Image 1 (cartoon, rainbow, N blue to C red):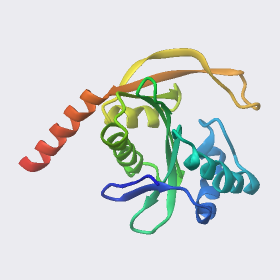
Image 2 (image 1 turned 135 degrees about the horizontal axis):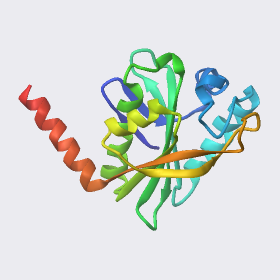
Image 3 (image 1 turned 30 degrees about the horizontal axis):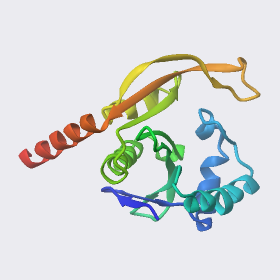
Image 4 (image 1 turned 90 degrees about the vertical axis):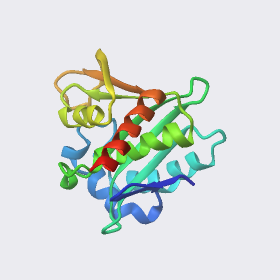
Length: 195
C-alpha cells in the first residue's frame, strides 16, 4: 500500500469508502473537461473504486499508482493523482484531477510535490513527465511551480471528447529529472531554514 503525507494532504490508495467524494468531482463536467474520462455515472465511479484500483494494487510489478488526495483537516478526498510506470526506462507519466471547489488553494501543487518525492525517493525513477491540454493553463502553472520544464507542443496528440468541435487537440509535454528534483528540494529546504 502506497501512502505519503504533505503539510495539508494525505496521498493514499483509493477505497470504496471514497465513493461520495470521488463521484462529486468525477461527475462534474467542468472538473473533468480536460480528462480522458467522465463525467462519470455512479456505476462508473463504483467500478473504478471497487475493481480497477484493487486490480492495480495486486499487479507485480505494479504499473499504476492511483492515489486519493485526502484533505487532512476534513478527511475528504478532494482529488486524485497518479503515476503510470515504465520500469524498463525508470520513467513515469503522471496525471491529476482536483474537485474544482478546491482550485486556487495550492493543493494540486502540494500533492504533485509529494508525488514527485515518492517517484524519485521511494520508487527511484529517473524521469517523470506529464502532458496537458494547451488550454489547461492552471495545470501548466502547477507543473511549472514544481520545476517541470515545458518540452514542447505535441500537435493533435489528445483525442477530444465526442461532443468537441474538433476530434483532436494539442498538448504540452512537461518533465523533470531526478537530479533536477533533488536540487530543487534541497534549495527549498535551505530557504525554509533561512527564514
